[in-house]
Length: 346
Figure 1 (cartoon, rainbow, N blue to C red):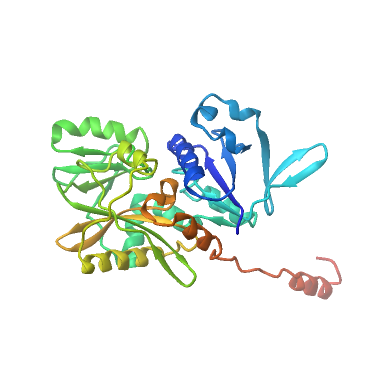
Figure 2: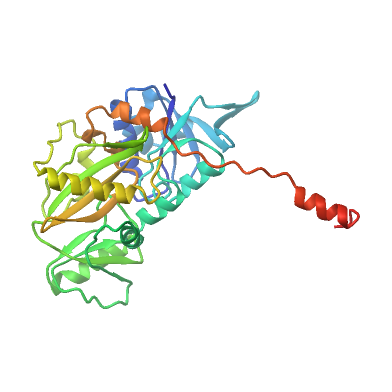
């Protein structure tokens, strides 16, 4: 049985969502957990389980906790008696948005040879940016909606109604449905508060939407149930925020065997584009029986526990199926050979 550590917080518009996600994970992952909080200054703190409550962070009480240092092999506490490594076998990247889903923490963990559940650097970059996600989907041969990317002085060509999204943001923050020219200026102002590049797509009223989570473990894919989320025009911040913290049992989507096969096939194609070691959730549209990827959630809220019958078993299996970086033997043969040939003068 692995000892899990959970990394959460960080400098992100989704900082508070990450805190709530970590608190929920404490309740649903049936393992003893070690919590590592990254604050807005990107300093790491060791948080005791008893202090895993929202106001402990909003009040600044966390600053009284032990600071952690990150170095080869893991996180360490520091004292007059030296440094001591936290007793963690594998960390869970539960930072949502910037710092966590954009690849920064993945790069750090890989650099320091720390085992972790979460997307690796390249997959993080491709899934964090909605424009790059379109390119990833094309590589995977999975359909996406037509789109255009715009900056502040751009002229939008897509006919109304449209949906406007910040290119690099999750949790439906900054997203607006725009039905006509009168609503456009305000929607652009909102979205540009969060990013300097936006994605514009046609808005399709009443489109069917399905969520599917999963991971590759033990030589095969472990899928969650398929959910058809309740939504209005689109899944709002509040709906996404509440979905992973709501204790109400999620109802499995009532779909045909053929559509279930198509959704799982699209998921596998996306996952095989570099998501080994991560538990991801894909949000799909279905239009005229064709599957379109809407969004890839590389670190879904509380890792989409609500979609699995035995979430802890899935996490245990994933922890034992993580990719391993190939070791490179650096033996200085080249330098030694040319130094020898130059008489030691190089």
